[in-house]
Amino acid sequence: MTTTAHALRAERIKFATLPSQWTAPLVALVLNTGITAAVGLAYASDTTPGEDPANTVYYGLNFGHVAVACLGILLIGQEFNTRMIDVSLTAVPRRRHLYLAKLTLGAALGLLLGLASTTLSFLAVATTTGLNLTTPGLARSFLAGVLYHPLLVVLCLGLTSALGNYTAALGLLTPTLFLGTTWLTAIPGIREAAQFLPDRAGQYALRTQAEPGIHYSHCTGLLIMLLWTTTAAYAGLRALRRRETSAHR
Image 1: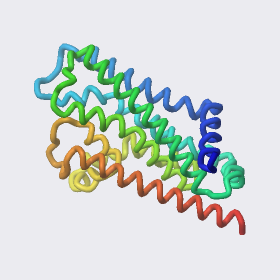
Image 2: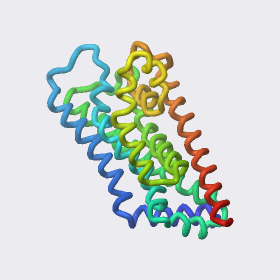
Image 3: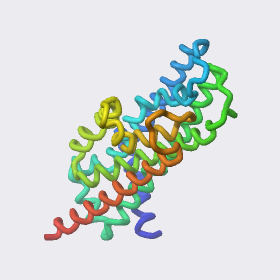
């Protein structure tokens, strides 16, 4: 087995044996699908003609994406908090292999979570409101919903690695994702810039209809989030390499 494969196996064992880590995706799945199903039942006979069906399908994601973010933070942040990261860095001579293993596990978990929660949310809305899954734009919206999860997990994992502090990452990222960007898009003047933030761009990709004031397409929104995620992942790698250098001084 290669170094990366060994590291990935170790990361998989860590994830399976630490309840705090595997609880996060379960909470995300429950929030994403449970709230969406409840809203679908409550408004089954009170839908507005012309309303974007994605608003109902992804209603639970407004709450569940915080748990998705926590998954990315926990995958590396707990090791910073307990200083077990030094043990991991000693065990894996080439730090990029350790980091790649964490990114791979995070992306895989996010992809599985995205596939499960998006599928169940679509089915719940289709069952309660009679949503026609052949509606134009819904196929693209489904794909975007699946991909949004791994992108968010990797984004938060990379930013946590860049910060090098679990508490700082948890205190900064979760309220920012839950409330911060929503407030920014409501402020005149700032909205123009806030629409390019990763979660705003990613969530716009989920919609099936155009929104006034957004200066890019739905597919471009997902590409913007991908760019943010790639940048965060690279920043996390650079920070981990600097930690390696300082550890050997």
